[in-house]
Amino acid sequence: MRDFRDAKLMARSLREALAERKIDLTNSQVLELVASQFGYDNWNVLAAKIEAAEPPRKQEAASIQPAIPIFRIFSVDKATEFYCSFLGFKVDWEHRFGDNSPLYCQVSRSGMLMHLSEHAGDASPGARVFVPMQGIRQFHAELIGKNYSYMRPGLEQAPWGLEVTVTDPFSNRITFCEREEA
Image 1 (cartoon, rainbow, N blue to C red):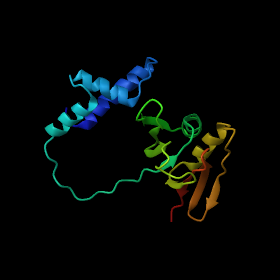
Image 2 (cartoon, rainbow, N blue to C red):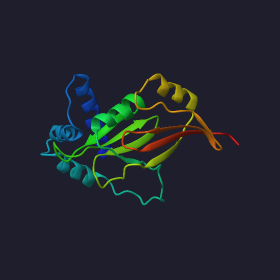
Image 3 (cartoon, one colour):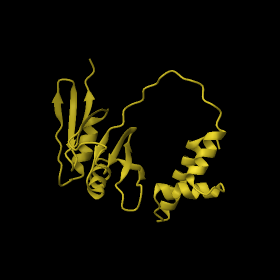
Image 4 (cartoon, rainbow, N blue to C red):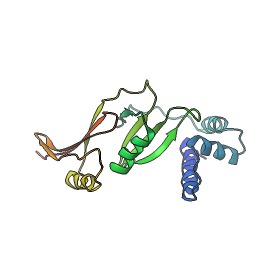
C-alpha cells in the first residue's frame, strides 16, 4: 500500500459494494473494517503505519486548488432532498464523531465539490457561491423538469453570462453561470 489514498479507496469500494447489497455502514465503520483486514486494531494505527512507511515527500512549490464551499445545514433529510434529489449531487462521504453527532459530508457533481455541515461553528446560513459551468440551458431544463415543490429557478441574463440561482432550505444560495465568450 502506497499511501492513505489506497486504504481510503479500498474503504470507499467496500462501502459501495456493501451498499449495493443493502448493507449501510458509516465511513468510519468501513475504515475500521479495512484496518482489521490488515491486522490492525483500528484505523488510526493503520494510518500511522502507512504514513511512517511513506518516503519523505519532496518540497513542492505552492499549489492552490479550487475552493470547496462549506454550507451550514439544519436537516439531513432536507439537505439530501435538495442537493441529491433536486440538484443531482451525490454524497461522496459522511462523517460523524458519534451516533448522535452532527453530520459533515461532501457532495459532488461534475467535478464541483461542496461540504455540508450540521456543526454550528463551520459556516453561517445564508452563504452564497458562484459556480461557472457549461450547458446552463440543459441544467435549467433538468431542474424545472423535476417539479421540485420548493424551487422553480429562472434562467436570467446577467452582463457576464446566463445564470440559474437556487436557494437551499437553509438560505444558502448557489448561482450557476455560463459565462459569455468575449
